Length: 219
Image (cartoon, rainbow, N blue to C red; front, side, top):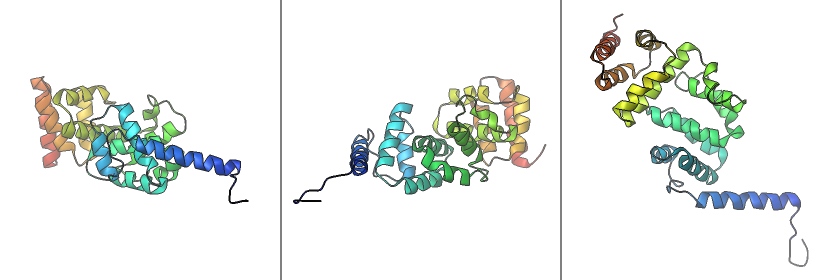
């Protein structure tokens, strides 16, 4: 400081530039959700295209400290809405490295484990298309049911039918056997919705039978 003026060091100039960049990013919130809670922000992003959603995540993140933002996103992921769970981890991908300790801390939570393992695999350099290889068969099946629950709650019937193609099991009977054993709390609702949506009467009947067996605890 001198003569009523302050000269910034290179580090100080960089810090000011970063802060201005954060303010500019936050001001460009396309959907206007930066003042919302994580859960409401994610709901607002549910219908956005991926690039628009990522822009919204960046704006929301720029408007708050990273630690509290990550904690909010993980709290939203723990809720009952499977769609928000997936979106929360998409937002955590935008956070990147600063979120790693918090994501590692939830790996042992059954509800979040598949999402956390995929996030960590991608963070460690795995191709997103190959990241699923870190999941066990049971974890992949649990994730399939959770994603199907999101589709059943927020998507259209044809999307739920197409979701069958993403299962790791080679046949529908094998999928039904493993889905019944995985113990996801939304299993019955997912199977009932799938049976109602599927155009093949024989397959729909098998899926309804599986839903009934899960509901009654039969084999």
